[in-house]
Amino acid sequence: MPPRPNEHSLFLQRLFTCFAVMACVILLVACPGPDGKGGKPGGGGKDGKDKPAEKSDAKIGEEVTFNDDSKWIVVSAENKGKTLAPNNQFEKEATTTGSFVLVHFKVTNLRKKEERIFITPKLIDSEGNEFKQMDMQRSYIPKGEKPMTGEAIPPNLPRGFWAVYEIAEGAKGIKFQARDLGSAFAPATKSIDLGF
Image (cartoon, rainbow, N blue to C red; front, side, top):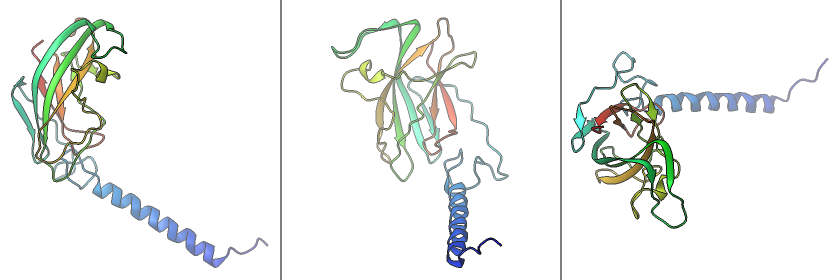
């Protein structure tokens, strides 16, 4: 006959299981959905279904807003061609078979607390191809300026950032995808046409 488990260890196992389940429930309820508010995971609407991203015809210099979350403006965007000069003496000139795009944008956090994002805005083309920010972009944006990744965005204080993207040769209809700040993994997006 196998030994009977210690009642104290059995109690601790059950207690740990209860705490683990409660922690999972709290995380699911507290995590913001696409609307940036707590509630059902992934559900922004009253029925818990995702709301589609609103279409935007915004152009450079026009503001896009995510209600109670953030405001975005693309200040400038420039197709830099196949080569990109570094802003310091330690990096080499970057080259590509496509094109480099340099984007200057501003974001204002409308939420009640400081935000930092690590999934930064992408560019998309007319075919739906997505282009992420360049890894070593800090060496290719204007000297003294900052990329967005991990930077503090305090409430109600506009912050300016720069980004470098590498896009495919012949890509057209390039749009900047502004995103809400409150959703970590599946942010709502709005497009801003860069004019090339």
